[in-house]
Image 1: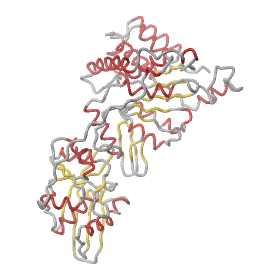
Image 2: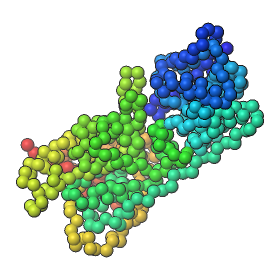
Image 3: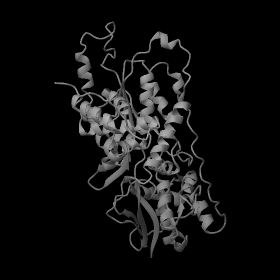
Length: 502
């Protein structure tokens, strides 16, 4: 007899169906796991054996073969422990095989039979719901699974609790959906004194989903401005919240079954490797650019990052996805992020200040800024110089306008874009492209003439030209204008980095 238990394998944000087949046959005692398992899956033999012993069941002295089908699909992770254990129990006659046929099973087993959390339960639940099946998962993740919809979820604390449920001795109650993540209270723009041009650029970036680079001396407030960004962005919609939560589930960072409602803000250290930023590794996992999906990826001290790591962001910033190619699998993760970066103008950081700048200026500035490639800078829509805050600004009272007022304008602009792109797979102006961009962002005749002159004078690339149009469209949305005019184009051009002359 061969017992079958349904589970899943994770490839990016896709859950693939896996059939756990367990056979107990005569022969020398042996426990084999086949079907392209990784080391974590192969080690499940010891965990399953110990867990069954802990609940008073001994494996028969026969040949036990576990096949994870399809055999050519890589199997990674510890969530195969529970389906293998239940398959063994079904093959031994301790559990009804027909009952197990109605569930997808995931979960890691402890040596004492307890169930430990494993990444990806939300994806497994969505997969089970699409197949009209129930889900069996650890109790710590029952609330996470309950978000997937109207389906049966069994979330026991341990293996013996699950067996008691199947035998009718102690029925498990369905877990309630976890609470939505509370809104985070970050820094308020009212704390930032001065820096009016930088605040305006921050508002435009938030309203249109544009990438932003702030360049200025140390202590000017670049990091504080970036930290204020989440406070002026609108909350995630329910569909977006589920999308972001799926990534957090795969990464194992979805705590207490709480659905993510606020936009992610990821700020990796400049020592981060290419794999840490874009994802990958021996067991492919999402990187920082995917963990920041629909949120902000903040790169402080931009030139201090490895050149190779920074250039690896070029494709995700353009396409909104990351494709990790391996010999045995190709995995894709979403990566629609806003890049917010900060940098000093030179290594000492005081270029332009005769009292503090080093003796190598301006040569040191050229060498320092050259660490960031031109193609990456060309993908940044807004470039703003953040000047040092004077003592006169610091003694002024707090600004009358804080994050709440700016957030209201940003939300109004985003609502305009939501209505505009309702029939298109586009969320914001930053994603508009091709014929759609020409339709919604073509300026009037004075604006067109100014843009043509500036494109030649500033030597804008085709990408830079279109990014100016997107920013101009966002500025027009903030102003409540139906069309893009010369004033909007002029302000958009003022934030564009001019190509260096030979």
